[in-house]
Image (cartoon, rainbow, N blue to C red; front, side):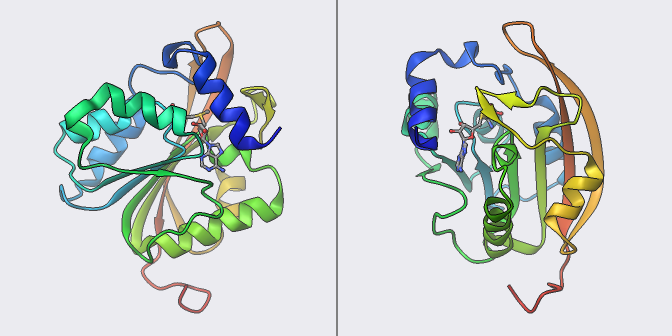
Length: 212
Ligand SMILES: C[S@@+](CC[C@H](N)C(=O)[O-])C[C@H]1O[C@@H](n2cnc3c(N)ncnc32)[C@H](O)[C@@H]1O
């Protein structure tokens, strides 16, 4: 089954609050984003945003340049229906983060909770990194949550790559400087324990590999 079909099936067969990764609010992500003190019109993208309420909280906090990207139109439809008119100014992108056309050096912040870890092949991870380097402003921020080594090897029935902060830093490469990291236990609605790693990286102002 294609990845896209998998995710469309997930979101059309279960309520958002029954999904394994569901949290009523992404408190850590939101608190870390707010701590950056970004302007309200600083462009922010939530990659693999799914049906999460992070976009609701960012809108409520006054952010006005929000993009949510996901493989699943079903997931985005859930959020759009929930937000109604409040979501009118959000850019909704359906597509694969490793391939979709993203604007150059546009985003001040790239957020990803539990999407990158599904990219288990080196070529996919490199494609993600290329997209990140294309779309993130020099000096921009990356806040990313993945499964940590203590978490199960699968999520949503798919294999995942689990990371320590050292491994994630290595995979992302020398353009990114780790600012903070934190392990956090998530318990799924079904009672399964999943240890997450959250990292905040800052992209260096000067690209190391020739101006991407
Ligand atoms: C485990 S869910 C996490 C959703 C949300 N970030 C949260 O924390 O509630 C992973 C999400 O990533 C999306 N996804 C998976 N692979 C993707 C890809 N290659 N490009 C874009 N989105 C992807 C899925 O559709 C799904 O919504």
